[in-house]
Amino acid sequence: MLNYEISGSGKETLVLLHGFMENLTIWDDMDFHLSEKFTLIKIDLPGHGLSKVYDEVHTMELMASEVKKVTDSLNIGKFHLLGHSMGGYATLAFADQFPEVLKSITLFFSSYFADDAEKKEQRQKSLRIIKEAFPAYVNAGVPNLFNPNEKDFLEGKIDHAKKIALSTNNNGVLAAVKGMIERTNKTSVLESFDGKVLVIAGKHDSAVKTNLILNHLPDKTNIKSYLLDCGHNGHWEKPIICAEIINTELLHNLPKHLLF
Image 1 (cartoon, one colour):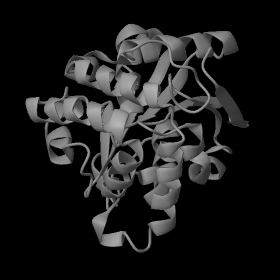
Image 2 (cartoon, helix red, strand yellow):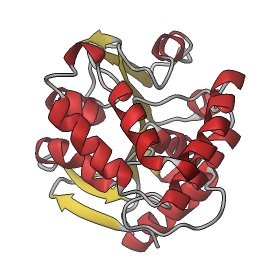
Image 3 (cartoon, rainbow, N blue to C red):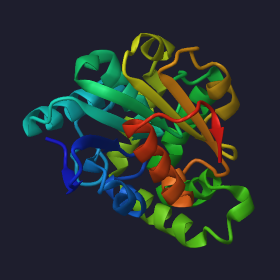
């Protein structure tokens, strides 16, 4: 079963899924601000952190199925599910397969669109680099995920993100890339999901197409979106603001499309 940790003492359960080349420790800066309101279940996705590599390809559906085994084992009933980046893709796959156990889904700097042809080509090319020059791949790519206007201020966070990425199992990284290439458009999940849908995005996010994501959200009253002045990693760049939105939005109601 996947590695996980539990913290917090809130009555509501929030399951947190990290992104590509991350692990469950990415939530540390937000944990304090969330744990009073929620019981947090932080999970290492397949091939990341302390979780094993399951197959040559880790599809988002495989990740979702393994997450379901954890939540079933804990007998937690209905819960909130939040995923960062790749974790958001796994969240959508989970909501597609197991909507009956979810109160809400949060796309945290993530996308419901499939990769376009250009992005798939980039991922295909990255497979060779990951095999042959993984440190170079990490050192070149990770800084680009942060707000370019605050690189000096965020230097410590960038170094921390690099360390986590470099600690990731190489085969797990390759399996995740192959799985992301295969993922499909999940707009239909947002259209059919009856629980709350929260989308938190970054103005300076180079990993996903923020404007496209926000402009094409289904027009439903249960969907809320927030645009923050940061890059792809709100958990490190704006942890307090992100936690405040999650606490308030998942437990109460806020006006739609607030801008921070």
